[in-house]
Structures are given as structure tokens and as C-alpha cells.
Length: 236
Image 1 (spheres, rainbow, N blue to C red):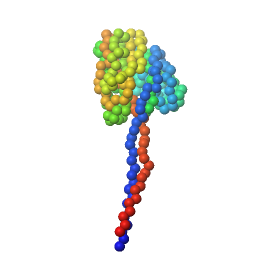
Image 2: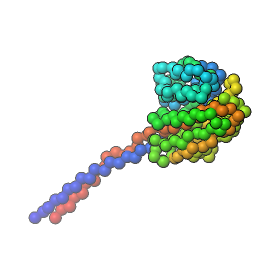
Image 3: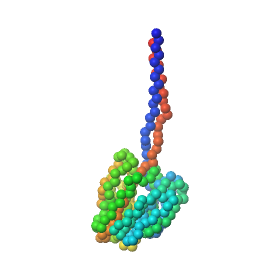
Image 4: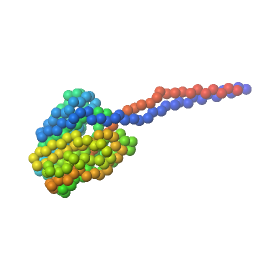
């Protein structure tokens, strides 16, 4: 008697990966309601952080391709952030009505801003704090960057020297400007982090401030191997 045993084992495996986020170029900062976006390519992440250092009214974001957060208005300051994935190398900022300061930055290898961002903190103390942020995209894998901004109603403080380090060790100042009696800054972690904790943003004599932190998510990359079939034959 002869018995034949045939076994076909299908092996298919793949693992997720993320692109490495990188700052593309110098961020542009203006005292205006529109800004020239730095040199960029199709697929880059464009971020505009807007500020208002004045009472009355919020900030209206442009429509079109921009995805914008709600305008955070309290304590005589306003902040609003918007982003888009560049559809070309010639994207424009549009008009951010009501804004006094715009900081525009460009990142490659990024898919957007996490849905849990931004986390905004507002207060009337003489010290400001960047809020803690639970990173959404990578579960501690360390692929996301954090973008942190602040505004105070006085320019004599340390917003531009006391960078956030709630998980970063090489944070970089990406934009800083003074308007009226106030100052606005934006930093990023200048590298991927796996966690972000609350951190002081600076001290100043004014009694009104606002901070914002957001997660920049890395672009997923699908990688894998073709199917493999192993044929085993046993004969007697």
C-alpha cells in the first residue's frame, strides 16, 4: 500500500513601517495674514500655525485644501493651526483672517497631524506650560515628531530660549516673532519621540499666554514578501 501525503503551506508575512520625518527647510514667519510657504514638493506636509495677540475675535482659516483646528480664543490671545499634504510644489497659504502672526513649516515623510491634536492650554499666569500629549500613531515605537508653539502678551520672557523637551533632547526653534507687546514661537522635537510629557514653556511678566502641542505622524510604508508555497511529499 502506498500513501501519499501532500501539504501546501502558504506563508505570507508583512510588517508595518514608517517613513522618517524630516524638516524640509527654514520655516517662514510673518506679521501678516498670509505667508509664503517654504520650498516644498508634492506629498510634503505643510503646517501653518497662526496667532493673534489681541482681544476680540478669533482666527478664520482659509478653506480649500487646509484642514484646520478650531480657533482657540481666551485670555486675549488666539491660536489656530492648519495643515495639508501638498498637491504640488506651489501651494499657497491663503488668508488667515484675524491672525497677526503666521509660522509656516514643511516636513517630508509625514502623513498629517494626529486626530488628538492640537492640545491647547491657556492661562493668565506669568509662566506657561506645554501640555502632555498621548502619541496616537505609533504606540511608543518612536516615529512621530511633536510640534509645540506658544504666545504671550509680553516679549520680555523666555519663550524663545526655553524649548520644550517633554521627550526630546535636540529640540529646534523653528519660528519666533514679536508683534505689539507679545511674542510667538514654534519648536519641534527635531527627531522622533516615543512619549511627550508636560513641560514648562517659559516665564514672562505678562499675565496671558497660550500654548499648543501637536503630533506629526509619519507616513506608513507597506512592506512584505511574496507568497511562498512549500510542497511536502511523503510516500510509502
